[in-house]
Length: 346
Image 1 (tube, one colour):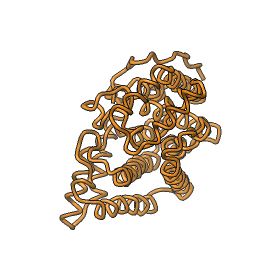
Image 2: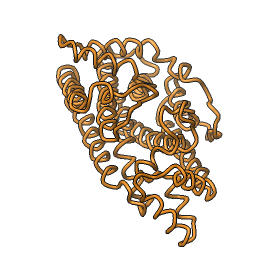
Image 3: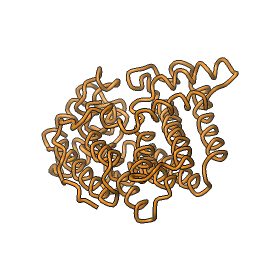
Image 4: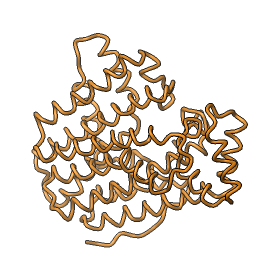
């Protein structure tokens, strides 16, 4: 295999637009979007209305794209098997719906009024119906997987869903834990974010019949990308404006979440500085002046730059894992997608 160039992504630099990165799978993504709408069809008018709300705001479709790109990358240089493509399309649907089901439940837990700048399901229909809608998505996913996808692949998706839920529970349990360690942080974000992204990559390869070494490489790529993706979210929370992000700046701190920039900033502070900021972060609710002070502390201690450096290192490691795959447009898109996650503005 040709070695990959080891080029770090400069902060704020987007190598390619997302639509260009998705070019090898553009037709399949469009078909998949229609497939998702059909999968959630219902004769119940209220369910249909809620489904329309969910499907109009599905974001970047990252997990679907990773399934399809990894499937294509593993099929490079040979005709794509119809069964492989059928399973990949079903898996692309499944991982996106699992992700969106967890977002619905997240918004309920966080009492969030907006998601990606759009009114959340819970603010439009209330918590009871929104919980049930999230449950419906999970039920539809596994019913459809059972009907169309091989057993070992379903097991891998279920394993990632289990890890994801474990990570969400872990995050809730550690709110306002101002002594959260870097190791604890990484364990939580692996489970709640990176586990499903890693599984999305791996099941794309499984559907293509990839060997164990290739599957390990895809899993490693997805895990590193998933961690970098979450760190980028941490950074956006401190840097992006409310209009771009769809929620107030510093929202994570307001909710008592200890993100990587804060953890790294506290680690660099003197013991007296650390004690003052930790006591401040325990305030609930955190007042605007206190939030501003906390964010200024994180910036002054270099927390943002240190966290970005870790994200860029993870991107380089993710790209390195792709050396196990033959060169192809799909592999090149995977390389660029890793960098896009860190350079994105929203």
